[in-house]
Amino acid sequence: MLTVNVDLGDRSYPIAIGAGLFGDKAFAEHVDQALLRQGKIVIVTNDVVAPLYLEKAKSFFAGRDCAEVVLADGEANKTLGAVDSIYEFLLSNKYDRHTTLVALGGGVVGDITGFAAATYLRGIDFVQIPTTLLAQVDSSVGGKTGVNHPLGKNMIGAFYQPRCVIADTDVLSTLPSREIKAGLAEVIKYGLIRDPRFFHWLGEHSAQLVNCDPALMAEVIQTCCRVKAEIVTEDERESGVRALLNLGHTFGHAIETAAGYGTWLHGETVAMGTVMAADLSARIGWIDADDARLVRRILEENFGMTVVPPADITIERYLDLMASDKKTEQGKLRFILLKAIGQGAIASDIEPGQLVATLEAGDRLCE
Image 1 (spheres, rainbow, N blue to C red):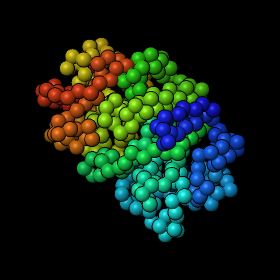
Image 2 (cartoon, rainbow, N blue to C red):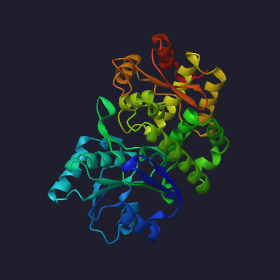
Image 3 (cartoon, rainbow, N blue to C red):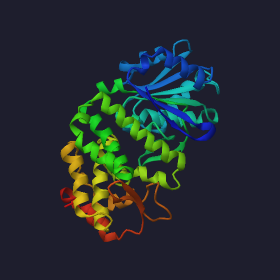
């Protein structure tokens, strides 16, 4: 088992990474005794994950009063209505402040469960058990919780840290290829904003990673969690450096919202948005054209990702949706771009013509 610690004083917590964690009784006992209050457990999952892992999760918390809430799967269900269904269950059954919610699922389940935990009785404990690669390397770590709104993705939420994150790499074996690639888009982001050697290493090992090589995946998850833990420790509430984790997300969130939640996986729109960010970085002179082309080539050719955004989103629609992005300040758009491979930076005062050129580029991105 590998461990990464998120150091936030009295809200610090461990991220445990390894194969077979669900079946490790000693580890389960450690979590139960060292990390959790001695209250009831409510596992929140969805109707895809539940048949695969709900009973394993219940066994992990053996000896506890353990119940479950099963939500509908998919980004389209990341709503206040889903959170209310958790409230309804908790209130109807009179769960108190010693209750621990367990998020068993991907990023959608984790975000919904975390937001419910942050707001039920003004805050109860929760545990993240991410079952997708994207959640294991990114969304389960750092305490961002929330839901979508028709006018913007993740616009309603709270910063609320879990008690621990349990990333059992065995669960990745049940993921379809599309989900693995979506997670790898977030992985590549870490190399681009912080670690050029990691970025190039990913490109060299793309075939093994797409095929979910267990040993390499554990290494990748640990590396991503370590980088994110360092950034979150420095800037928990995204007032500075944490914004770099949103490389590709301003464009990507606009694509998700415009296309309709669930049309594209989050990681798929991050891949598109990352290429758009590389294109814009080159247009403003931060990186050269060769580096922009390299970003696209790694994502598109090495990892087989779709990088060309949908052609039916108008410039006006992009600008309207990006104006609602959380990084926008006093009406001014801010983007996470690249000063170099491995060096992300916040950019403001982008010339409208340069931005429009990127939005119009389509399959000519990074040419």
